[in-house]
Length: 255
Image (tube, rainbow, N blue to C red; front, side, top):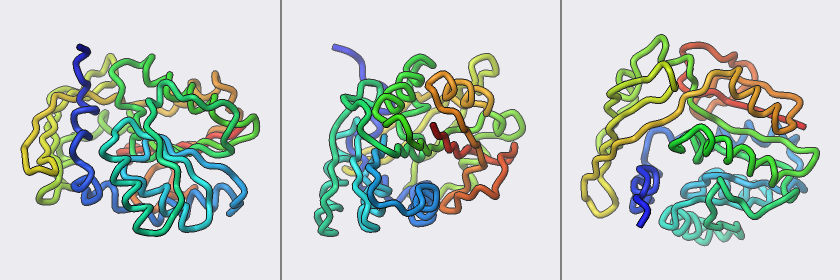
């Protein structure tokens, strides 16, 4: 039997706690940015990749958009469906692996927020499969908006200090053991208390990307206009140029 990866184990029983994490508190402002980027065109079909508990999908649906949310975790999807039902919304939430999506030329817009799968995969090739499958799911004229870890940040800052600053009681804790300059992967120990009150300790590794890599990967997939900004929680803006101070980058790609 194939061993479960850390990101599969982490989200098996974490749906209640997930919505209380500090990094999930910027939904409204992030959806404001998405709306602005797609010119408030409610005819556009949106796919939310790595949708988690559906926070962006549900908020966009509230605003009148048709959204399909996909995620690898059934427990997160169950929570998303429950939240949509409570809000009287019809949002399609489906379990899929982002490396193997069944869609082709179906969506006008893709969003992938807060490391929705990419860049959590164990190899660079798997991460690229996510970008490739999202690209395949999009129509010829489309837009792809996502956030990912900024490889410039750990060159100048301690990842542990960053997580310590944003930590609140009952949230996950991160202990970075090694940032590998050859692979731009951070190897860390993540501890969480799941929805049953059980503490889980996971050996994780995440891939940080520099802007030139992201630009090149997207160009190989046919995106012709790629803009990269600093991703500030709940305050995405084209005014925020990416710097070494930004833990995440915000990518807007068009073709």
